[in-house]
Amino acid sequence: MSTQRKRQFINHLNTLNKPVRFDNFVFSRMFLLWAALGLIGGVTAGIYWITLEYLTHSIAHFEGWLVIPVMAICGLLAGLVIHVIGDPGEMHLMVNNIRFKKGKLDPKNNPSMIVSSLLCVASGGSLGPEAPLVQVTGSTGSWIGRLLRLKEEELRSLSIAGMASGFTALFGAPLGGSLFALEILHHKHAVEYYQAIIPALVASSFSYIIFAVIINMGIGPTWELPAYEMFDRFDFAYAVLFGLCATAIGWLFIYYIKILQSILKTIEFPIYIKTFAGGIVLGIIAYYLPVTRYFGHDQIHTLLTESFTLNMLLAIIVFKIIAIGVTVTSGWRGGFIIPLFFVGACLGLIIHQYFPMVNLALTIVSCMAAINACVTRTPMSTTILLSSLTGFTYFIPILFASLTGYFLAPRTPFIKSQLKEIEEE
Image (cartoon, rainbow, N blue to C red):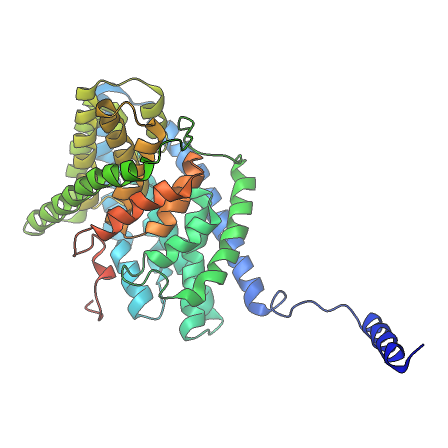
C-alpha cells in the first residue's frame, strides 16, 4: 500500500473515531426559543379558535330580527371591555412599534384584545381573528425577549416570529405566514427585516403543528375552487385584467374607510357608544343579507356552492364593503384579510358573469389576490396563502394578480405606519 493511501486510510479511521456532531445552530438557545415561541403561539391560537367557535355557535342561535339587538349588545360589551381594561390599539400601531421601537410590543392590553375581539368576531362583525392573534402572539414574543434581555435585532426577530406563529396557525401556511409577518411591516422593502425570516419559519412550523393537533385540522385547501388547468396562453393577461378590476375596488375600499374615519373623528363619543352604534348598523345589514355577516371564512364557501343572481352578488359586495368599513371605524376589533378575500371572491363571481369563457377559479383567485395585495401591500405572502387556502397550485397567475394590486395601490397605504419614515406616535 502506498504512503498516500495509508495516510488516507488513517484519516478515515480518525474521522470514524470522532463523536457525531450536529450543527450547533440546531441546538442553540435561539433555535429552542423560536420553537418554544411557536408552540406557545399554536396553543394560544388553538384555545382562541375553540373559544371563538363555541361563542359563535352560541350567539348564532339568535336569528331573524334578533340579530340586530344581539350584535348591538355584543358591540356595547366589547366597547366597555376596551374602555375599562384598556385600548389594545390597531394593526398600524403594532407595525409602528416593530419598525420604530425595536420590536417592543406591550402585552398589557392583550386581555382587552382577546375578550373584545372574541365578542366582535363571534357576534358577526366583518373582521376576522387574524389581527388579534398576530398582536397577542407578537407581544408574547416581545415579552419573552425582554425577559431574557435580548437586544436590537434579536428582540425584533422574536416579536416578528411571534406574529408569524399566530398568523400561520389560522391560515395553515407556515411559509405564507412568515412572509406576511415581514411584508406587512414596510411596503417598499418587503424583506427589510430579513434577519427574522428563519426565526419566523421555525416558530410558524411549530405553531402550525400544535394548532393542527389541538383543533384536529386536516391538511388541504380551506375553500374548494373548481379545477384549473392552464390551457390558454392568455390566462396571465386575464389575471392582470381581473387584478385591475379588484385593484379598483381596493382603491374604493381604502378611501371609503379613510373618509368614514375622518367623519367619525369629528364626533366625540366614548368607545362603547361607537361600538354599540356600529353593532346596530351591522345587525341591520346582517338581517337583510345574512351572507355578509361574520368575517367570511364559511361565507366564502357559501358563495362558491350556492347560486346567486348578478343583482344579489352586487348587493352582497356593496354591503359587505360597507359592513367592513363600519366594523373598522366603529371600534370593533379584528383583521380584514379574510373579509377582503370574501370581497375578492364575490367580485370574481360577478366578473365571471361577463367572462364565462374564462375558468372560474382563475377569475376568483385573481380578484382575491389583487384586492388583498392592494390594501395590505403583501404580494408574496398573498400569493402563497391563496395557493394554500384554495388549492390553486399555479403560482404565476396569482403572482401576476398580486403584483398588479401591489404596484397600482394608492400612494398612501391603508396601514399608515407602512409609509412613515420616522416615529410620530
